[in-house]
Image (cartoon, rainbow, N blue to C red; front, side, top):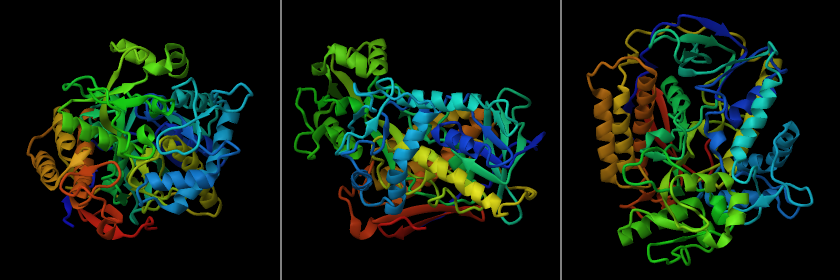
Length: 558
């Protein structure tokens, strides 16, 4: 496959200040906080860096819940089966087995930490069902505020040790690039504290290991459920540093995102899959339940199946959206079970108790990311990744509902344990970053071009793709990055350039994969093609070029 030209560094000033820690954890969602709290006490100093405030990431917005086999009638094997089916043949079974077997214990530890899940009358954690699950195994909190409750519990645990000199938190800090020594081992980051110093001013944080937990890349599309901070900063920095990224083309488009009109962009209101789990159904303009006969699980089919069925029904009817009908669930139940969703819908002029809710697919989750092994190690020594930033092999071509919070919890914990073991064994000693070579940095895209990136990605590498559409997107992004415009160095310019770098890599994989699988549809190749495409596409930067390679095989290449 053809190579892509992406530079080693984003343009920035020379570091004007430095700090040192044993481990630098970047990101304060469930993955980053779990890892940082677990590392505290096992290493001398942890530095937790977060882009804005600690609660601003995707964890806070997770509505549905966290999946784990907590019911005595459920089992890790059943959870494993459902995850493998949703992943459309590309999950790594070993990684999924780690997730489903260690998950229940990690969730119970979260309860011990202070997370308050909704309870059944007998006191057990109340469990519900979402698309792709054949058992009730979704634990939720506050009805539809699970992520916010988990974030609260983890941040309060962090606050309880705020005076501990072994853990330091820097908020409002954007990580710009990774630092490496002469042997390419990752040994720190450059970061910009937003609102302080010069626009291009950065500092350097040195560490024996770096953990990327920076979330996803949702802002690469015009409409997404992701918060504004989800600009793929960790993935892009890892790509430029030479880490392997894998499965970038597998983007999950949530089927039921509230449709706010053609001009709506940015973060859009999610209508949780749990609403359908409680009995809501999808209908078209004529009131027809179109999921019947599409899949045995009908409205609770895996997300890719539902999203494609919605796109097909919109295409057939010429409608801009379909409808979610929850009216039969009743006002009292909806307000008790989904208070946040009901309140948000009413703010926007729709009452789920009396009105149909307009919905259409929008970007929701990146199944691919920085390739890792079962301990969260990337292909670069000293660099770890977890949460949505990582590609552990758990999700394959399509994430099973509510497995994301569990993945961050389980693999954040495994990374902390692996780092502690390696430190105890004398591995990853302190090292010194190599000097940057002149000419390795890049001119930036002005933040005004973000909308150009988003439009190109939505049109060409969205839920419905083709050879022509992806080729056009590659041309647009390539032209933007090759332009001679000299943009002012700003936080927005760094983010926009990150989105363009990742968009170019993602689109190269989307163009190469000539089949329909997981979260996307190839209009020119409408069938899943196991004979030619049961495998993984990876990206690795070497000598200023991103090499895009395909590795056949059902498992996840380790």
